[in-house]
Length: 80
Image 1 (cartoon, rainbow, N blue to C red):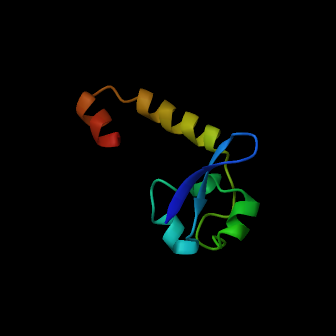
Image 2 (cartoon, one colour):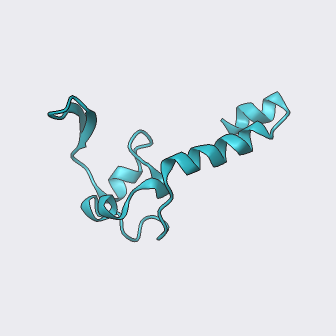
């Protein structure tokens, strides 16, 4: 399904053998709205995700802020 690799600059990346609906069904590989336009074309994701792309860092901050506002430990656990 996927394999970990390194490029000529020793940067790590993941090579995948799936695309489309199969790709977004794998939580480890699904970046949701963070897929760029190029990635959406390459992995045949057009029409499977919302049209707008949101950087992953922005999504991380938004989710963390929502998590931080929860005071009840049980609700935090459920959120995670």
